Amino acid sequence: MNTPVEPPVSKPWYVYLVRAANGSLYCGISDDPVRRFAKHQSGKGARFFLSSPAMALVYTELCRDKSEALRQERLIKKLRKSAKECLVASAAAGLSL
Image 1 (cartoon, rainbow, N blue to C red):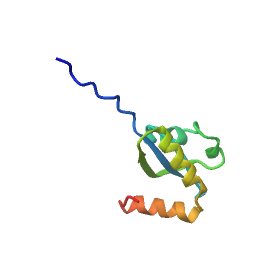
Image 2 (cartoon, helix red, strand yellow):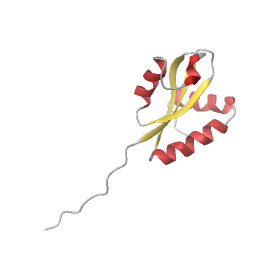
Image 3 (spheres, rainbow, N blue to C red):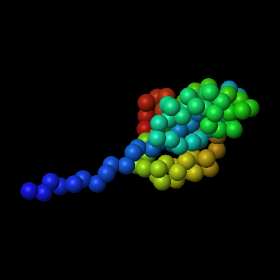
């Protein structure tokens, strides 16, 4: 008797926003945004935080896979800061867009 083999489930990826000490928002992707944020706080992982340290992980969005996370990251990076702040506010309010 053959047991059906399910295709391997791809690891979930996230797009995330981190608030820097100067108020700016950094957008990135990771398969573990909390671990990645800790890396940013330690001064490793992105030159962006050399001038202003990472203060808070303010937004995460679950994506199907890495390619979707990359597409979403590109879209978010094109947004104005006011639109990114709306994403942050929606996350703080517990809403998903």
